[in-house]
Image (cartoon, rainbow, N blue to C red; front, side):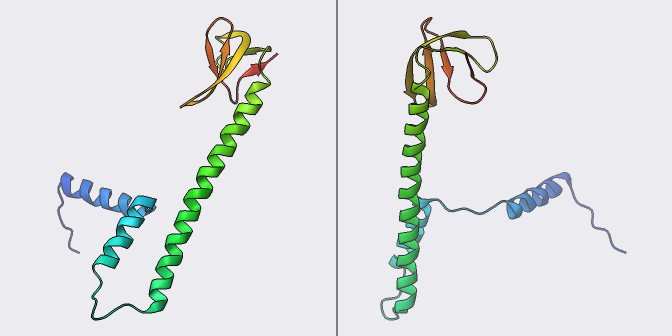
Amino acid sequence: MNVEATSGAQQAQKAGAARQANAPQTVDYQSFLRLLVAEMKNQDPTSPMESTDYVAQLASFSQVEQSVQANAKLDQILQASALAQAGSLVGREVTSADGEITGTVAEVRLYSDGVMAVLESGDKIPVGPGVVIR
């Protein structure tokens, strides 16, 4: 039986390759568009692709575009829903999830990191699971 000697660097490289092989392969929208444009640019004009291939590419492009638009709309709906629910907190006493901040909600604001209840004291509490409403 032959056993090959390997260095620590080789073992780490093999482990990294194995993790990369097991990682899910995803292509974002911009990468897909770059790939599609590159493929179309590099086609041989004397040997055009089959019309079915072209239609399949257009269908893929259309599906990606629709998915991106649907995700954007869903994000907007979720954000509006969270803001509407948070609006019902105005005038009520709340306690933060860690129990350290308590007060009456004066207003609700939408920040880049989510919906925040602004207390009369000026403290801010993120609205979400764990917030105790009294």
